[in-house]
Amino acid sequence: MFAIKRANPYYRAQWKEDEEKGVVFRQREDEIRKLHSQFPSMDAEEQGQWVAELAKIYDFETSPALRFDSVTALGKSTHPDVDAVLVRACSDESTKVRIAACKSLAGRQSTTASQMLATVAQSDKDTSVRSAALRSLGTFQTDDAKSILRKSLDEKSPAIQFAATEALKTMTGKDLGGDVDIWRQFLDGQPIDE
Image 1 (cartoon, rainbow, N blue to C red):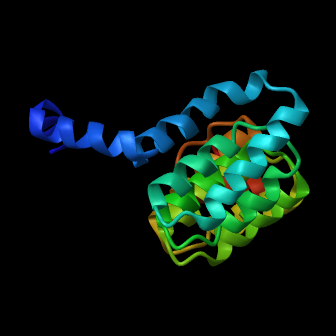
Image 2 (cartoon, rainbow, N blue to C red; image 1 turned 180 degrees about the horizontal axis):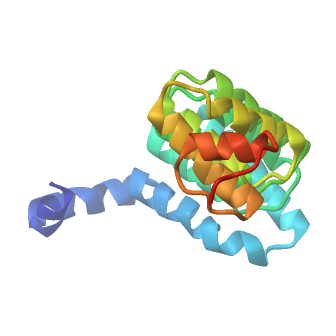
C-alpha cells in the first residue's frame, strides 16, 4: 500500500507539507537506522550521548516500530549503559521489540545480559521470544547458559527444543543435528551413538 501511495502525487504533496511542519515518522526512523552502521566508528563519549538519546526514545516512544529500531541500534553499541535499556526492552509489550532486545543482548557478553536472557528464556509467555532468548544464550560460554539450554531440551514445545539445539550448536561448536535425545546424552556426559 505504501508503494502505491508513494507513486501518487497527492500523497507525496501531503507528505511534503508534513515534513515542512516538522520531523515526521519516516525521518525519525531513518535517523535511528543510520546509527546501526555508525555506532562502531564512534568513540565512547559519542556513543554515550547517542545511547542516552536512544534510551529516551525507547522509554517515551509509543510506536513499537521506533522502539524496535532503537533497541536494534543499541545492539550495535559497545557502551556499558546499553545493558540497562535492553533489559527494560525485554519486558516490552511488543513481541517484536522483546525479540530484538534478546538478539541485541547476544552481542553484549555481560553477566547482566546472560542473566536477562536466562530469565526471558524461562519465563516469557511468547514462544518466539523464548526461542530468541535461547538462541542468544547460545553465544555465552557459561555453565548457567548451558544448564538453561539443557532444561529447554525437556520442554514440550518443538520450537523451544529446536531453538535450544541451535543454541547448543553455537555454544559447543558441535553439530549433533536436531535430535534432542542425542543432545541430552552429550550434555549429560553419556556416550553418543554416531
